[in-house]
Amino acid sequence: EVQLVESGGGLVQAGGSLRLSCAASGFTYDNDNYAIGWWRRAPGKAREGVSCISGKDGSTVYVDSAKGRFTISSDNAKSTVYLQMNSLKPEDTAVYYCAVTFRATMCYRDGMDYWGKGTLVTVSS
Image (tube, rainbow, N blue to C red):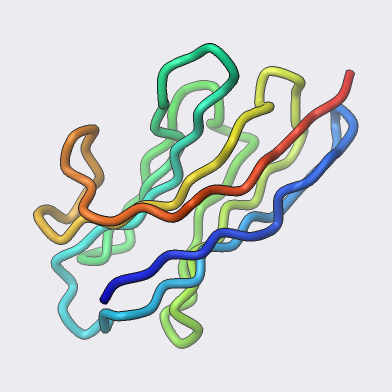
C-alpha cells in the first residue's frame, strides 16, 4: 500500500524558511512513470497545486506565487521528496499535502492517486 507522510510544518515569521518532507513508501522508484507534488489548502480557499517533480526526468513546475521562493527536490535513496520554502509570506499559510500520481509523469489536478494527511504551515506577519 502506498503511503505518504508529510512533516516539517510549523509556525514561522514572515521572511523565514521551512523545509517540508514527504516520506513515501509502498512503491519503488525503479519505474519512472510517476510524479510527486505538493499541494496546499488555505483556510476558506480551494486546494492549490504548489509544485511537482517528474519521476521520468526530474523536471519541476511551480505555481507562480512560489517561483523563486520554493524548491522541490527528490532523494530517491531515502524515498523522500522535499519542499524548501524561503521568504515565506502570511499568504503561504495553509495545510500542505504531498500527493503522487502513477498515471502521468507530471502532476495534474484530478489525477493524483494517493495523498498524505498534510502538515500545517503558519506564517505570522
